[in-house]
Amino acid sequence: MEILDIIVFSLMGLGVLFTAIRLIIGPHFSDRVVALDTFNMIVIGVIVVLASVFKSELYLDIAIVYAILAFLETVVFARYLEGNRK
Image (cartoon, rainbow, N blue to C red; front, side, top):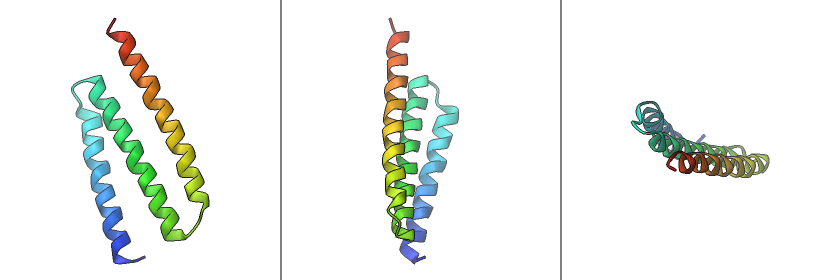
């Protein structure tokens, strides 16, 4: 592993830490949904960086499937929030 990979993983880990804090102490449900979506995007980034490190295209397929599922999850939570406001 190169030094650049270590720096990238460290910054992503820091992002996961801050996102997890917002996910836990978020005062509103909408804050938690945004934190969860951010967490999903960071995880997708980690999977893509892993694909680059291991030089495997399988990880990119996994990242695409995870991105689709994360998008659907965000849509479901947004619909749920929209339904609670009526």
